[in-house]
Image 1 (tube, rainbow, N blue to C red):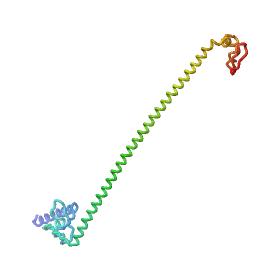
Image 2 (image 1 turned 45 degrees about the vertical axis):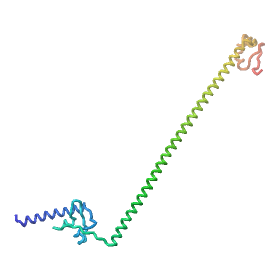
Image 3 (image 1 turned 90 degrees about the horizontal axis):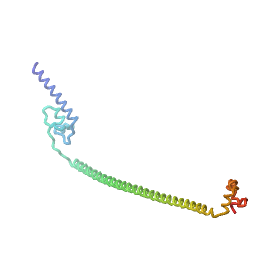
Image 4 (image 1 turned 135 degrees about the vertical axis):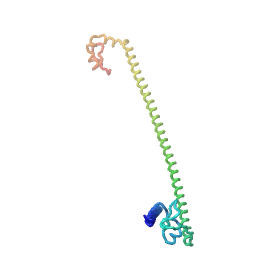
Length: 206
């Protein structure tokens, strides 16, 4: 194989390597604010990436040094830079004010939510207390009603006992009960009245 053929293969191989490197720099890199002298002279975008000391255009060119150009500003460019910086500071201050307003609003919402939660607890406690008082009152009324019914029953029993105790001292009633006609006419007694000792009926209203 001749030396010219080897030289051509090496040249082709280096060209492939340089093209691949240039493509990776352009894909992963960033445009420099101040281009290198070559890119500034040619009016091209100067793209560099971390770990590379040459831009993509200088990599593409053979035996080319990538030298950074000195920054130079005109009065108009300087005024634009100052205005842009001031605009960013104003926007930052406005964003901080908005954030402070939002934080204050969030704190107010939290306090209101806490207050409403406490009020809800007070309402529940008040309802529970009212229910307990009503239950206590109902229990007291139930006991009073039971005592009244018990007293009424005792009064009825005492009245019956008094009537029974007074029956032997009533000769007319004793004579009626001893009379055979009393038991024969017992049904009519219940329906219509009590018979007299002489055999007639007395009205229950007399």
